[in-house]
Amino acid sequence: MKFRAYIVEDSPTIRENLIEALHEMALVDAVGTAETENEGKRWLAQNHDYWDLAIIDLFLKEGSGLNILEACRFRRPTQKMVVLSNHATNDVRWRCAQLGADAVFDKSTEIDALVDFCIKERVKVDPGG
Image (cartoon, rainbow, N blue to C red; front, side):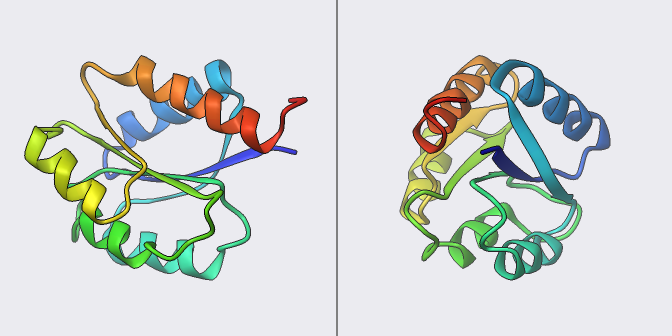
């Protein structure tokens, strides 16, 4: 069983590097991407059985990652949502937690922690993988 991630990130460079890093280091497969709030919300809602992890940036080409978190508050308990942002202040972490984020990671300093989180969650979904 694969561990499937959906990524909402408007920077093509960050998105491509993230997909590659997660695949190589955490055995996470990207099942799709979005650059805007509406695109992300629509895909996550229409494909609720096809993702295990959503990685959301807060500041998008259009809209906000906070609204995506709020739209996905009532997902399955096995589905995790994390925020990956350059603005991971204590206030932002608190607000994201209020909206149902399972974790918040800073893009510039916490990529290793994101990878570790992904590995831990993947093992829960697929203990043999």
